[in-house]
Length: 389
Image (cartoon, rainbow, N blue to C red; front, side, top):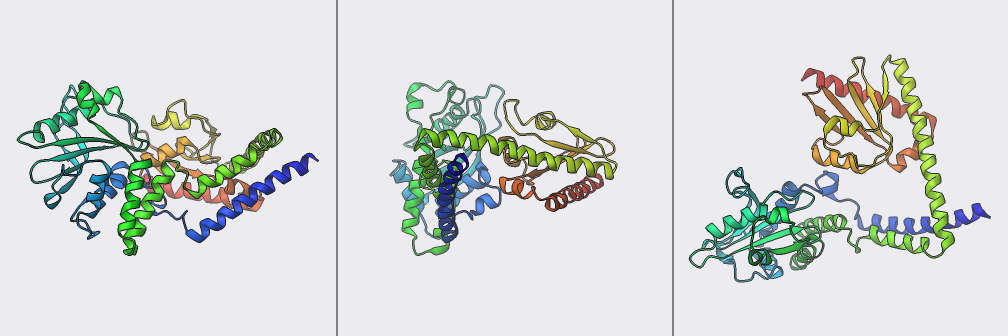
């Protein structure tokens, strides 16, 4: 009866997953160009760049001030910027940051007109607030865009519309802080993009480009409208339908973790065996990310890792059982996906992100053997490239 109970629960979940897979296949929603290129969280090269491309009246979209006008209306700044003379600057340099963090920096986006009116936009995806950042931008705006009938607006754009924290506000007075406009990608930008799509419904390439970016934002902001989120909610409904279901899922999770570990250990043993054949040494270290790069804090939680070293004990590979936060930070930090180097310490790492699908395939001995061989061959190739540099 216990087995039948688990099987019934899995069947229900499989039915939901299968249905959403069919929808994804029909719509192509999982084929997101920004995610494919690993650009989903790059503030300047992706988000500021895309916003600039749409807001720019002289942009390749050839829609003039259409998108800019919709944006100004969305943030209640109609009339602030003269549309006929409007221009956009991305990453505007306002001087070197001084030792007291009171002046200087780079403003992510500036919307300006010939009269000197301006909207200064600080764009935040995952980056931390910088010391006195908004204070410095406000100081710049007050000096250059707040004289002789000039006006300026300071905008703080984040994923969820959060208010700026004390470190970035600095010594700004309450009146200035209250005038900062806080925008969110989750609501404001996604809604603005929807309006933009509506206006260019028949301009297919442009519409789909906006649609791709809009869907990326829905993913980043955990928007309930994505089919992935809807699927998760449907599965949650099944799990919370009864206490028995809730307990069964917990048992399934525990069993899955054990099974994953058993399969991964098979891979570890095969790697050790291959090490012996190739006369290489093997070491094991759970905290290799922290020790190597300094990018990962100690509070990151990730699964067992394997470090492969060559005859001189120089680490070459790390293999992680599945996607985790530590790997994601490294992927975001290094443009060359899956590989990082540190010439100062003579280290080269090649990352293998083993997804649940991959772990399932590793049950098969022949598949596992081929995987191990490819790992070592990749190691040899990358190490050879590094040594020639």
